[in-house]
Length: 609
Image 1 (cartoon, helix red, strand yellow):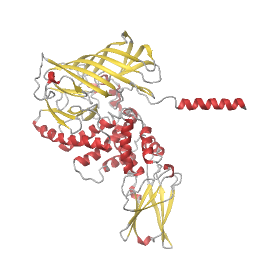
Image 2 (cartoon, helix red, strand yellow):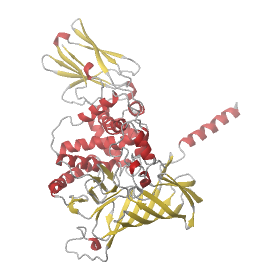
Image 3 (cartoon, helix red, strand yellow):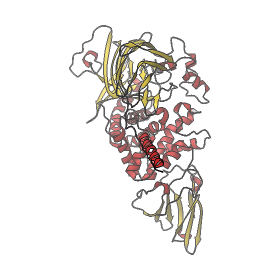
């Protein structure tokens, strides 16, 4: 008996240790890159020194780099995937398969050493597989030195040269980039034109290019007096030599580095009071200049809105660059197409700027949890547009709910835990990431209360900035803020395709009292706000908490009388409540008059006498 007790105790201690054997950690990189761009053939040569800090508790026996430009070649994984999707992104379609050798993109690693000693490596599509000379022990730093060549593909998706709007260079995903290693292991996913995940670090980048080209992007320019083009301080004499300029940037604590360049860029600078400097680089085209000028004060408003609602923007600079193929966020900047209506120009800027918080400061793994980035961004940017454009729409998120309803009834929905590249339909990915992700956040306000949702977003940002949070990390913040258990919500909404459908099944009268019977038709349970309007124009609400919440939200309409009823166990398909007033005095009964619970069948949510 004694031996058995000892054995159980030892196993228990080991199990507890195994579940809690590490605290939070993340890897770190320091890049120093020197690149020369030939604007005649759009080829470039570069050197890269990368100091890699293994802050994990694991010994690493290999490392991986992303070589994104290799996706823009006939027969690449991006090409084959796009061709075989039933509804490919029209910007990609079968265009990659038609590229000529002069039009393709590539990244070729010519040499690679670890602490000065050459090491073996192999290119597999968009991933470089590296065999280390010596394993990297926990806590150890190593230096990787690399020489590489690249060719910029014609503009197809995000990156590229000579876009439809005439932008010469949209340089995103352009350099060999160390893959992220975290508590789940390596994230060396091939590039299929979807999302990204990167290692936090510091970048020191020098770009040598034709002197007529104007650059903007990630980081702080270190030599404005040599560059000019509006970067130098007023009154500073610009000193240029030769036919090229070397633009020297430093970017602290970012996980990516992007830039764009064009010889016809106009460059405007706006200072946000008590905030960052904003740079606007756009084509010198008469038909778009007024729109880009009007965009600038709106961008200041957006910066202030997001800093107030999420958290203070931590960098000293943000750039809005005309480039790319739509809108895409990068560290300290965004690339957007610029030939748009003014409303569209502000809208795309609002969305991409909001990504600065949810992707380039919080930085979830977009390949696995794309709905956290795209959905949260869509939620807050929609509210921001309503504010800065003075739309005065009391239900500005209605479009997000409608998009989700279309997805939920489409027959092609997949759980949000689906890896971003492996959705069977492009439309299902988009709706799941953007609209269903946005509704996740909005509907959370229905569950825990709008005040608690606002507090949750701020606390989430404060606790998890620069740390790659997961869905569970966000859920735990919301639980701590609200005092409500939310595991059921995260599981049902993101890990299944269960839908919400509640109905008023029956309203009957007995002895001058009214009995209301509710029914849960859908598989996903929810707390219920029920509103009863009487013929004398008075309205009262009845709140039915979901038992597995283990808590209650505050009255969402404090001026309205609310009665808190007994919990509804999720196992029970029905629930009944009694009113002390007769049915003849009731004008209407409605489930959730705020329309923030995503009920896929609102037709059965009401009763009218």
